[in-house]
Length: 259
Length: 262
Image 1 (cartoon, helix red, strand yellow):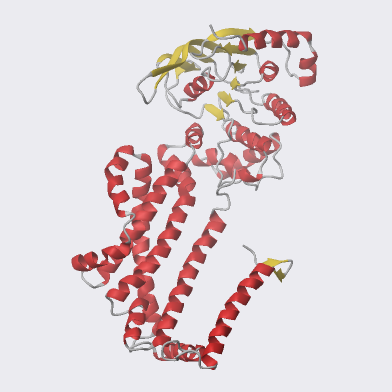
Image 2 (image 1 turned 120 degrees about the vertical axis):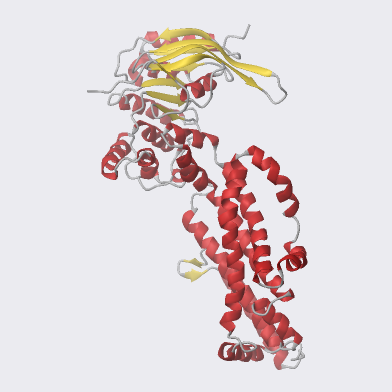
């Protein structure tokens, strides 16, 4: 049986920052979103629309100024094991090799070695890093680093996967490979996913819902349901006329001038 | 750095070896043809003989290794104490802004003062025995290690710390297993610089007031015009300084191969 992630609820969330000159900036305002268990939601929007701020609040790195965020009905107060975060700039331990980077979480939580070792090996294979077990992050390509980040997070079986433009820095071909890899990984373990991207095609291909946000202060403009059947293959999805229509609609909203 | 290419020494290594050989040959030739006053610039043979004598009979009734050990003990003693105190304080300095605000003015003021300028004060307060030397070396190493630890701790990427909390680490684990290892490159660099300073300083302190040690030996030998002994003292100080530097380089190459690479 496939374990299923928890429902994510974002209720009336706003975030204001106080700058060094005591002025205030509202990053996001009045956000309401709901992501059903094991669904994938992508957020697209112009730079500075507060989508990363939203993700960091869900991760527990920042506190909302107003509103609340619930995972499986429980309010989020701090970072936790139930939410795995994948950053655009890989946050890997440079002094640990691939194997130890993945094993680090279970090891720190006191799991017995004979329990996590086979798991680490399984995830190394699942993300296609076999043969690189004893390489260090600096010896890996950008795509391999993201594979490593994903494996390190998935081994903890998170309820919610938070991905902040994870493939944004990769070349086009690697990005496609990573998108298909991600969908393939989700067939085994199905967390709820909150995915931030600049790439509208990526958002449509991966998601059940795509949410478009406005420029600062970030607000939800519209949320689109994505109808394609899973499992998906990029070539099939991209060829469908629905895909082109959705892409056009979303792009026009993203590029709409403020005001 | 590897001096060999395909089993042969590369030409820059050859240049280095030749340069050193030329200097020694020039020295030997100048002595041989009487161009150097042997009382002021002893011939290599005299230095070699003095070394054999020192190893066999020691200096001023004490064996040579005792002079070396005395200096090493002072330098390493103060240095190790400085690591034990400086790393925790540096870590606190790098994480706690209020503590940093209180302590930084003192550290910033002390750091540019050449430690040698403090020798008279330390002798005045702590006497001419071991305490004043250890205290001075401790202070010097402490400043470097503390400030480097603080800057290393601050350099650990914020996202790496946050990611660690998301992996389920406790605050203590984040500190000991993420922040400290992340700061290690700068901590070790601080140690390497501090070690070189400590070694220079111990000799300076011994020149001024000591009954044993390499600094004492060269000072005393100069007073009695035993110039070959002075040269040997300088040589030993140089070789030990190089060895200490090499030790830290080896530590860095082994444990910090990942540093500065993305």
